[in-house]
Amino acid sequence: MADICYVCGQEVQGGFEVHERTMRDGTPVIAIDATPDRNYNVCDFCNIIVHFVCSRDPESGYCDPCLDKLEAYESEDEA
Image (tube, rainbow, N blue to C red; front, side, top):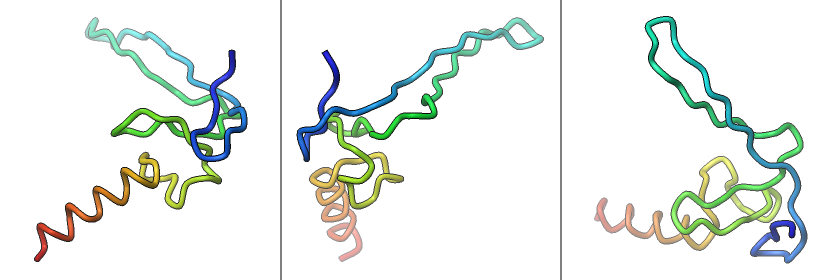
Protein backbone atom coordinates (compact mmCIF):
# COMPACT_ATOMS: atom_id res chain seq x y z
CA MET A 1 0.00 0.00 0.00
CA ALA A 2 1.40 3.37 -1.04
CA ASP A 3 1.71 6.36 1.27
CA ILE A 4 -0.83 9.15 0.80
CA CYS A 5 -0.37 12.92 1.12
CA TYR A 6 -2.26 14.25 4.15
CA VAL A 7 -3.24 17.45 2.29
CA CYS A 8 -4.38 16.34 -1.17
CA GLY A 9 -5.04 12.64 -0.61
CA GLN A 10 -2.93 11.59 -3.60
CA GLU A 11 -0.24 8.93 -3.61
CA VAL A 12 3.34 10.06 -3.04
CA GLN A 13 6.37 8.81 -4.97
CA GLY A 14 9.87 7.82 -4.06
CA GLY A 15 11.33 7.04 -0.71
CA PHE A 16 14.57 6.61 1.15
CA GLU A 17 17.63 4.41 0.81
CA VAL A 18 19.76 3.35 3.76
CA HIS A 19 23.50 2.88 3.27
CA GLU A 20 25.84 1.37 5.82
CA ARG A 21 29.51 2.22 5.64
CA THR A 22 32.56 1.99 7.84
CA MET A 23 35.02 4.84 8.25
CA ARG A 24 38.74 4.13 7.99
CA ASP A 25 39.01 4.07 11.78
CA GLY A 26 36.31 1.38 11.96
CA THR A 27 33.47 3.67 13.04
CA PRO A 28 30.16 2.51 11.52
CA VAL A 29 28.18 5.13 9.60
CA ILE A 30 24.56 4.90 8.53
CA ALA A 31 23.41 7.30 5.81
CA ILE A 32 19.81 7.88 4.76
CA ASP A 33 19.37 9.39 1.31
CA ALA A 34 16.23 10.29 -0.59
CA THR A 35 15.58 8.58 -3.90
CA PRO A 36 15.69 10.97 -6.88
CA ASP A 37 11.95 10.62 -7.50
CA ARG A 38 10.86 11.47 -3.94
CA ASN A 39 8.17 14.16 -3.99
CA TYR A 40 7.22 14.42 -0.32
CA ASN A 41 8.33 15.11 3.23
CA VAL A 42 7.57 13.32 6.44
CA CYS A 43 6.95 16.12 8.95
CA ASP A 44 9.79 16.32 11.47
CA PHE A 45 7.31 17.06 14.26
CA CYS A 46 4.14 15.00 13.71
CA ASN A 47 5.31 12.50 11.04
CA ILE A 48 2.47 13.09 8.58
CA ILE A 49 3.30 12.75 4.89
CA VAL A 50 2.86 15.79 2.64
CA HIS A 51 3.82 16.46 -0.98
CA PHE A 52 6.40 19.19 -1.51
CA VAL A 53 3.85 21.07 -3.64
CA CYS A 54 1.23 20.84 -0.85
CA SER A 55 3.54 22.51 1.67
CA ARG A 56 4.19 26.24 1.82
CA ASP A 57 7.81 25.67 2.94
CA PRO A 58 8.96 22.16 2.01
CA GLU A 59 12.58 23.00 2.89
CA SER A 60 11.57 23.43 6.56
CA GLY A 61 10.78 19.73 6.99
CA TYR A 62 7.45 20.56 8.66
CA CYS A 63 3.84 20.31 7.51
CA ASP A 64 1.94 23.62 7.43
CA PRO A 65 0.07 23.11 10.76
CA CYS A 66 3.30 22.28 12.59
CA LEU A 67 5.11 25.16 10.90
CA ASP A 68 2.31 27.49 12.07
CA LYS A 69 2.74 26.22 15.65
CA LEU A 70 6.51 26.67 15.49
CA GLU A 71 6.19 30.20 14.11
CA ALA A 72 3.63 31.12 16.80
CA TYR A 73 5.91 29.74 19.50
CA GLU A 74 8.91 31.66 18.13
CA SER A 75 6.93 34.91 17.91
CA GLU A 76 5.85 34.48 21.56
CA ASP A 77 9.51 34.08 22.54
CA GLU A 78 10.40 37.32 20.72
CA ALA A 79 7.64 39.33 22.44
